[in-house]
Length: 520
Image 1 (cartoon, rainbow, N blue to C red):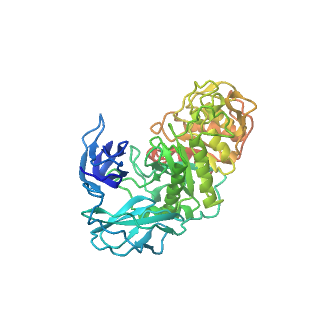
Image 2: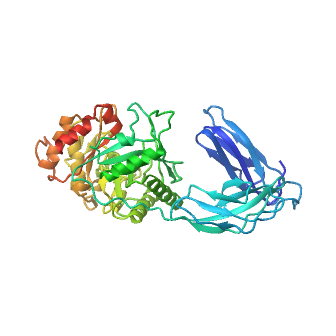
Image 3: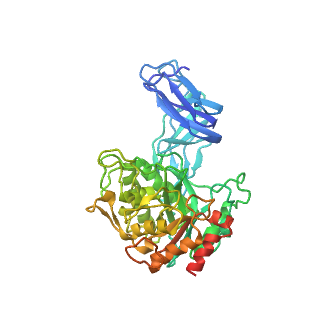
């Protein structure tokens, strides 16, 4: 289609399907594209590009990806000056008088003066198109509390789109929630609630979570893409969870749990939620989006459940006390920002796998010759940097390979021995990669809980209640330790974590009952 040289155009289309690409070629030095990895319902793709100084035509394309089913597309639109000349009579004038009204925590009302000949208006937030309207006012929604935004508006008609207006700034109202006073009980039971998805364990409403659970982690907040930093959370769709409550009832139940002294956290990540904060922009998006979820649902804090390839150390980053890898540095910065925003009552927990923590006793990052897995021990710099802000670390003592303990013997899942050895490492400290000059310091007992699967259905490494009791007897009383010799006794050990509340309920609440029997 015809275009004008050196002009700005916006290309958009509504699509449905997996890995759908929208783009243009021929009018720019390098093809401009955008895509979506998964659009189960109709989703709008949009991109803006500026034509080269000699361009007179552009090719618009839509395509899928190999191995994916057919996709759907509709309402493809290219908005900008029409081709065939250096000027385009009929394009509306630039709107004047753009004004921002009184913001709320999540909205900003805008209004402007009507433009003669305009049939519509396009609203931009921080340079991104967010609304198309026919009136001279609109309210921009979905914003984050205590955040400054810049807005512009353009006028449109059949001839094209005007330049954008002068920008107006507005800052949303403060929406920070202060968690209620009071800390955790001396011994706490932590569990994950399947809030956003369904599986064989069944859905459980927040109001129905048994009182045994002291910390309830909402599984999961997941990223819009691996490197965006933007986290989203929503309740399980009714098509998957027939018993799901309304959002209003969910929020009310959270408030009731908190009033009863329970802590309710957003758990970010999970097995399917890869989060890589590769840039400072991703870091800032993480802080903004997580804050928004905390404020929206009235939560006490956040649980970091980064698994898979979320954390990895760059080659040449050997010191866990002074990391340089962006995904590590940016995560530390983001969590410190959240802690500073919400203050002393903010609850910060982490649920790494053993590979990212205790495995650091033998291996750290890619190693001195670059041949190791760069994810080895990758949580250690995060834990170390946040050791004074960390409420609770509950390493997943499940879905794990054999790990070397401080006795220089390998320990395997399923019995008390594994949990004793893994927990002893956290409460004693250990030399990272065997370097006694580079010690990972011990955590306080009240900062440590032991992570276990609630049943054999929940994960590999299920541990029978009798073996859990042996573990606790050894670590808190110094009895029944078997062949392993701990480096101390810790009666202040905080407690136990399990995946998950749902799986435990599916198994007649065995895990919670065992905990209640040990620490009534």
